[in-house]
Length: 383
Image 1 (tube, helix red, strand yellow):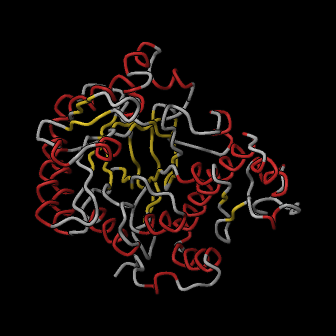
Image 2: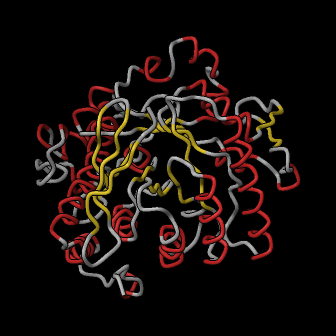
Image 3: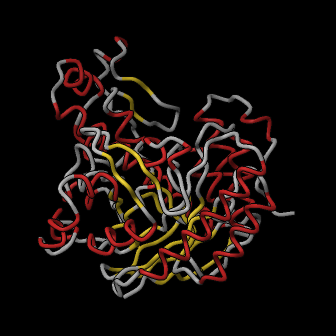
């Protein structure tokens, strides 16, 4: 079946949405944070542990799986779910972000993108059709259109041409899409320009995708610009389809995205910072490599219900990290993922109670220790 989004409630003071996504693997509540399993595995966390922290949809990376082990092998294994033993929904990205980070501008043509493998330098060519073909074989629940990922900042005329190409590629991908169990999302581009975001959103809606993603953020712009990019996109998207903000995992950014009408988020941030000894807490990030935690026999976060916080101390996890024991990085990854998943669970309660702006104010006060966040320049509050 295709996924189905159900809008249950919109928060009274903002555009925050409470909803559910129906999938072949059950129904999941939104807002939701989705762990990233780049190579068909969330780094340091088993499928069993992902279920224990209440993960819903998880991500896999089309580019990396295309190169190793290859979509045909995964197809012969019965699809990505069976291959990685994940009994839950999976979203695959298009591979575009990785491809464009490897390609030179002159190698981006109307046909597709020429680039070299990051593994061995082999020449590769990825087109919208090929990206969809790979994802159809991976048999994820949600596939992404192949779009042009542009840098920031970029001149208006360049962004305009890029949006037109993204729309042409979206149509080409949709025309060859043929997996009836899978849903296909369009990706809104347009840089920091509202008219281009509006145009891209409206043209994608005309193509009637199963859901819509917001691309081109978290690429070097400041926070205020990022939040405007989100607003410029969500305000033109339908209320009965999922809205996905790609590659965003900072706690404050998730709150701000939810306030602006985003339903689902993903990012490698929680596992990436774990590999450097860092942990999310309600009072900001901490680095357990710091000497002050050597004799700290309290949990990472007293309020957290994850396996790491219920069973281990900062001192023990610091010891593991200091001597390069894999368990330390695994525990930090479990905690960081649970922190963001629990954050979205809290946000769902706030939407039910129409108090998300108050929650944001308290969260920011704690997270930044009382600092004035962005000088309140962007509120996300309804006019």
